[in-house]
Image (cartoon, rainbow, N blue to C red; front, side):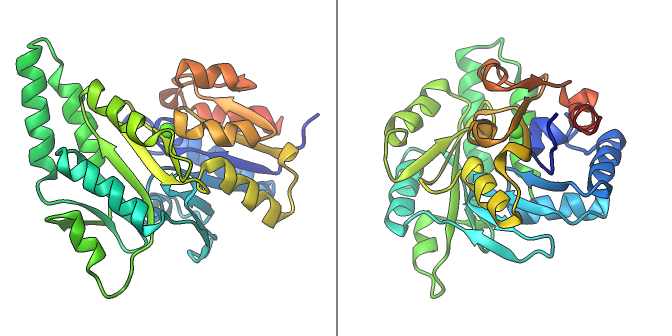
Length: 289
Ligand code: CA
């Protein structure tokens, strides 16, 4: 019998349904877990202020692992731990993305910086894709772009170079590159995927996300479990994408969403329902039984 004391849940495609909301079923199950003394931890590729705005609405304060494990906040909103890209690496990645007209987001301690012409870049990509393949379902693409735009905490820049001219040096937690073109995503993986200084993951079909080699959801979960004095064997983690792989590998019980990628389901111990069927609530009830 496992005695789970710690549950780490991903957000997009996991705790959030396809309307990007926490369902009442999921909210209730999370609160029941907390009442039973279980530590609930949100673990996401999103930035902390984005998670906070979602959880404030639920009236919950939890530990939060954000930017794919680069930052850990305590339930009071204080930074407990953070890992940044070295400045030279951040500069090199951003130069590469900007030269090739990628839409990008830079997750920092101050804001999510994104180019002023970000929307224009994605519209150009959508037009190119549509003319190359008139059957393209543009609605799906527009929805994917909207998910990016709907985050909170954006600040706009003309060029990444602005980020390195500031008096107060920024902490670069994570850099996201986005494209609707498979070959452009592949180029990102080929350029940065083997770099020993970096961790490269993906949380959705159209992006790749680059952090320091010391940042991953798995490393953050391990650090936090140690801090809380909970053995990894008594932790559970649930997710749907590649950026969840590291935490599913270290958690005592690894749960994949019903809507997870096939490779994520294969490495999990259990598969729960989909995010639109309140898969997290289903998992929690199962663990608490
Ligand atoms: Ca996800």
